[in-house]
Length: 297
Image (cartoon, rainbow, N blue to C red; front, side):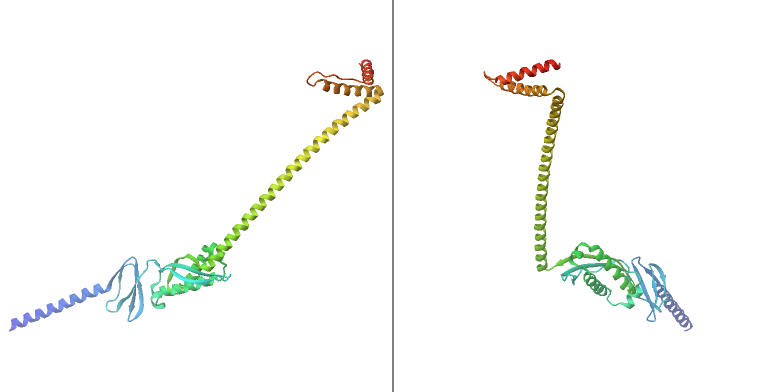
């Protein structure tokens, strides 16, 4: 009977020790938390926020603290969202947007917003409508980078209380309805036709200017030639006048005789046999002129 009591006591002690060992193992496993690099753990104590565990090995109070939320801190992309907007020149457009963000303060994200993706999508839609309402259609098409920066900056300010960092916002496409597309195509064709007419008119104008310049140049050259010819004739006349002044009438007769000789040479230089009849007065003038020339030399 005594041995039975001893053995029973030993078994009781061993069982207690085993239970205690199991309790310690569970406590250690519960207290030690290994957080992956891509996550953060939100710890609650008695139902309230206690701490946020960063990646690595962390220790919490077992059976008192508990990991309530495991939050991924990887960058996320919202699904492409399409919303209507009206430009300042009253054109209806459909804008496709996409937003990239990541959670940097999980305690704010968990306790301040329920559906973070839906909240961001709604905020982006409001910002896009507001910004496009300030711009004309041509500005929306040509200044897309400006619109993207405006959306990203305003979104970053509005989601700051949610513990979110907006890494990138994109305007993927700006679509128009069929009626607007047809009107823009018609306007584009009209603009092309106008440019073609302007180019043709400018070409004709340039051709006319060049033709006028050519005619003016030709007239200037002709006037220049006439001026030179007139100057030459005036020079010859001045020489004759000087000769008449110096030698009197005989010098004039000599010049006339030379002209007549040149004319007879031209007549005699023709093809075939020709007979030239010279008046007696001309022969007498030749004689007088040559006598004058003999005296002058």
